[in-house]
View (tube, rainbow, N blue to C red):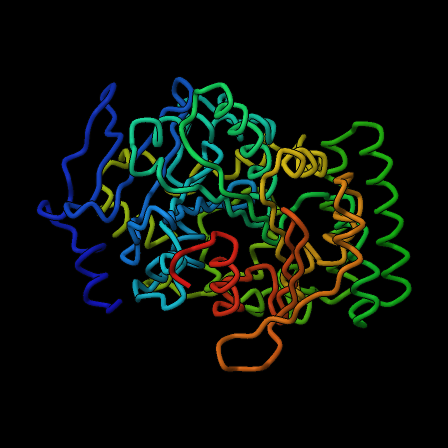
Length: 459
């Protein structure tokens, strides 16, 4: 799709382009483009807790009843990172953060639904900080409420299977949402078809990840024996804290471990272990979370994704400037990312909890579950992913582990881009030469993967 079409469709900010917003309780809660290609709004998921969503209708959408067109719900991580900002403009949406068309947009495979989740993230906000969620399950319930409000009165949306695709901490939201949504569907409270769940570089088992950091970095010569001994000592402290139920203390020790890793490795990039933190190795325009302060520990991840872009290309400037003006319904006193530090703080007691059992429940319920991971990621290293997958109690696990992988290519290029294997409703993709942000590092093979996950008619 050409640049001029997107510019007209998305970013000419005039009264002609915008449907007048509807109001409820004095707060604008829904708006969109005149041609219906985009809609956005707020859902009050609980009293005084407001969640923002943005839906793009794909220009490639087909109306073949035998091949239903999918909707992809993108869930960002953090906690406190904005899907409406980061996933949309930095990774898979129609435009990048310079407002140029993205050739690898996932709109080629499905509609896109971005949500600022949990409340307090991005444009979402709470009127009282005590309304922020404290557990992943609470976040899943809020997302279920949002889906009920969006899908139950929209038969067009109901005809499309929903695929939940998550990145990083978003994986924990994805599985809790999946179980909550299944329960609501069974009870007749939610009208949609759950097509599947994809966990991209997802923080599903924190203990397995922190235990993988030292050995992985030692194997690639990024730390020495001294660094390995120091990191392993803290890993055992974290293991004991989790066993004792001291989850906030485990989160603190996680931050201490990061400090040891940084010191021992001369500041390795947690998003790409072949790079240094701050070198841009994460391969995003690192202004992407410039307005999020979360905590000093979390910022060590984000620092590696920051550049001194300024002006065009700076995501915070974009979201609090031209995008806020376009959307029209964002309250004047709401700043994109203004409450994100509190989101992380309030979830700190659940940050180190695993969600392996939830994956097992989804598999037993027959839900298609996909795991994909970038080869060069450290924070959610493939070594850690494989460790938690092997802990699944799913009856098909042994068969899955025994079968061979299939290489992945991109078009006519025969360079190996990754590997994949599947058994029944469980699927795994190993994406080569990619770090934490797989859609950015390997857009071509990732787009093919998304088409497979969603069974998109547009192959």
